[in-house]
Image (cartoon, rainbow, N blue to C red; front, side, top):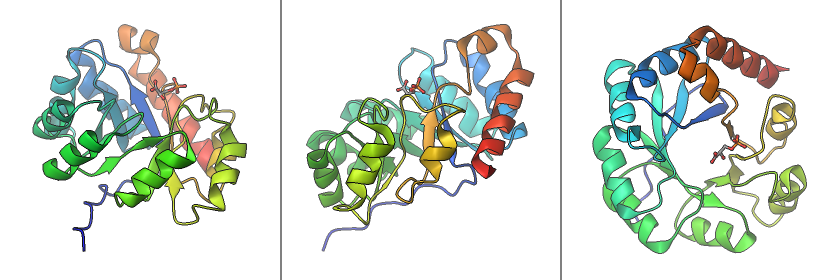
Length: 211
Ligand code: 3PG
């Protein structure tokens, strides 16, 4: 009998902002701006040199924000994200060595999938929540409906091509638990320090979830 996988932290928001940060100084005001708009979860992608410091800053200074590390591609990424204080991890895909590193790190994790075979491999490893990436390229709602029948126990977080106009449709799909997207933290708003715009985008997204 295998050990149960650690659960994701509890958060209220069904929308996960996917962010690429160029400056560590943006991390805390961004997290506070999203919280002010009703979003209590964030995926900081390991795509920039400051990402780990940004995760550490949010974990330390904004504890009510559930900070996840995204774009985990290697075992080393997993360890460094865990050590920085990420409460969970996400990846655009998964591989045996990545899943092993995640298990060893004890990090709650959302593996990425795009095909039925990848869903089967993640399911075999014990995962029931998976990131469908890139969601609209993979077929969007039609793909999610097609996956629902053979994989009745799997829930998805479609990411990639999700936006304010289509998020309600995704969330209405019974096998969709969450959606992710980058539109909530536009790079121009980050550069300008326009935290009010980010709070407004978060409120709009939360409104669309309710609608
Ligand atoms: C990404 O990896 O950049 C995310 O999937 C976000 O995709 P999006 O920019 O289409 O929201």
